[in-house]
Amino acid sequence: GNFTRSDSVSDRLILGLNASGPLKLEDVK
Image 1: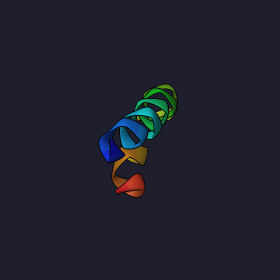
Image 2 (image 1 turned 180 degrees about the vertical axis):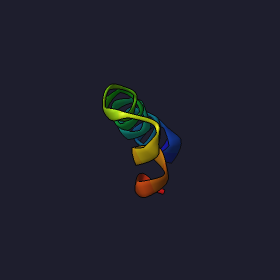
Image 3 (image 1 turned 60 degrees about the vertical axis):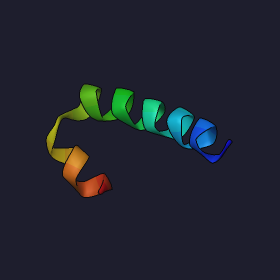
């Protein structure tokens, strides 16, 4: 239930971070 929505957001963030760079990953946290 809740995880479903989180997964969608995480997927989008991961894609954006990968394109920008791994450093941003820490910023998101």
